[in-house]
Amino acid sequence: MKTLFKTAVQGPAFGLALLLGAFLPAEMPPRAGLQGRSMQEALAQEVDWWALPAFQDILARHDRFLPELARMRRQAASHAPELARLLAALPGSDGLNAAHIERILAKPEPSGARGGGVVFEPWAGRWAGSWSNGRQQFHSWGPAMLLEGRWVQPVTLSESEFVEPNCAQDMMALRRSDIAINVNSPQHGITGWVSKVQDGRVEMPHIGYQLNDTTLIWLCQAKYPGREQEPGRGDWLVFLETIVQPQGQAAYRIHGLKFRFGEEGAIQAAPENHSGLYRPATEGTRRGEAW
Image (cartoon, rainbow, N blue to C red):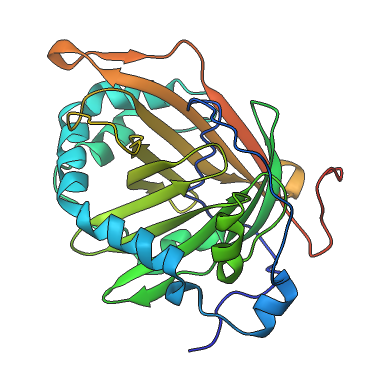
């Protein structure tokens, strides 16, 4: 099978897009210069993204964690009213109804969103913009493909340049890109995983929900190497991700908030939320250009 995602993809795009620098402790490694094969050389070899060790590893991590993802979904369902009110209060929740959000979150068993990989299509392509911590972001979201009975979408997230999914192995080794997958399956619903290396190693398992054709909710917890954490305890992150059309131009908007599940169903939320706004990028877009 040849490469599924080449250079420029036009139109709006999807994401699991977890720009977590504003939430997670920064452990900034020294930035290495781009070495070894060039991106063009890697593309010329037509490397399949799903065959790269980096994506094989993230798929294996995701699959081993499926029982815990199911437990996370049940825990979220038991707190659906509080989570719905939290999401409805976010700045990016324009037009969303808290009762509708609650009905979606209240299902303790997963149900894959309609359309398989189509659920991720509105975000497929290249996006660039700034997160609320001031860092510029470059995201490449590949098309979803059917792998072993589930739809899987590859994602790369970089603070320096666009990285094609089939070039992610080298760029992760240089700590110049994080990678992620978005998954939709009949057995487990919408799930995902982010492996972060740019600001220190963090693994981010996700559960997802489709509110409508252009809006997704993601819930996740950070997993740090060498740290023990009781399942369901500690900090959670919730993200509301939407494709919008301000002034007729597509944009990808994300709002995120850190919270904890407290006693007797109460949710303790952080005092401020974080956000990002990203525009579709063209082939020639580079760091620092105006949008």
